[in-house]
Length: 360
Ligand SMILES: NC(=O)c1ccc[n+]([C@@H]2O[C@H](COP(=O)([O-])OP(=O)(O)OC[C@H]3O[C@@H](n4cnc5c(N)ncnc54)[C@H](OP(=O)(O)O)[C@@H]3O)[C@@H](O)[C@H]2O)c1
Picture 1 (cartoon, helix red, strand yellow):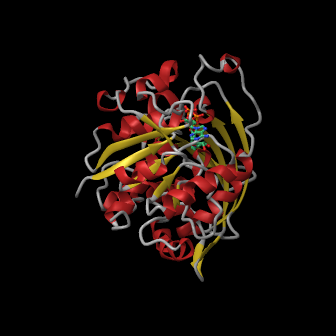
Picture 2 (cartoon, rainbow, N blue to C red):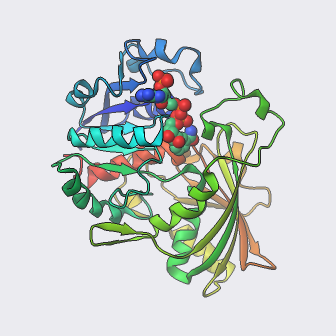
Picture 3 (cartoon, rainbow, N blue to C red):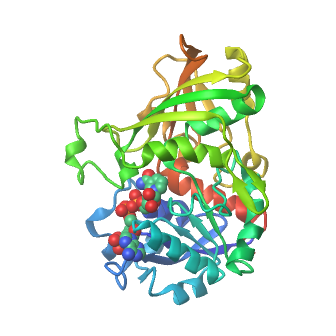
């Protein structure tokens, strides 16, 4: 595989920091541009981050002294240095939409962690193991944007990256009628650490703005079909969600209740999970977990602290599958929110797009 030059837009943020670690010694990608707000522009990466570095590993040596650009004002310079960019910024939704379209119109593909374009009908929202075929919509998007190479592809919200992978292969085989999910979400999902958010120590906050809507609506786009140049969201399975913020640094847990059209046995469900592999596994993409869904028989597993980093934080963990008195089954699942759920998921998506030739 050839090496691609890449940029990180929002490099100083929580997700941007994850990107910098994942990309520092990536076999296919070489970081050649870092960008953030005008507050960081002109400083070295290390200076711009200041005391905000929130990762366990140190700032990568090869990025420390790179000058951070202004993501908006320096766009011409940035696109001249890269083959494509990753984007994770904290700006108003319409500003992010405009920023990402501007990069695409400069013939620079954007792999985005932001929610702004998730419901633009010709922008694919991809979990690479589940709906890689949605890359086909990119041709329609390029026609709308008037580009040859530039496009936007997004990943879905971190809250659903544990339960959608567990449910999707079950729906394919047995049909899901309805699903109730409660998520227990880490503080890094809000771009925070305990130092910067001491109110979260010994606390649970029963509200995360916009998260329940995303958790119910985004799966239907992932389940959607391409028709007449658009991704038309599915109208089932039906989801209802409650999302809570819990005092955990990284890792979103979900408690799931599900009813099927054709109720499988527990053994059949475990068989589906064990054998579920997608294009990333078949193509052996660098960030693809070898085993996508890890199932645990122990009653007290999966645990956030013990499981979130397995397979580089890219695997999904499930446990406690049992029959329920109101739904057919209940179980729990877990994924690392800033790895599989954010930067890692975007890197895997970029690897898929490279393998399919979209970045050339
Ligand atoms: N954290 C997660 O688990 C997670 C998961 C999935 C998706 N996301 C999404 O990823 C995005 C970033 O999240 P985060 O947690 O990394 O946020 P964050 O830690 O607050 O970082 C925000 C980044 O945006 C940059 N920025 C702010 N205003 C800007 C401007 N006017 N122009 C250019 N850059 C600007 C900041 O640069 P400065 O440092 O210069 O201010 C910083 O690099 C959000 O859309 C979020 O919803 C986050």
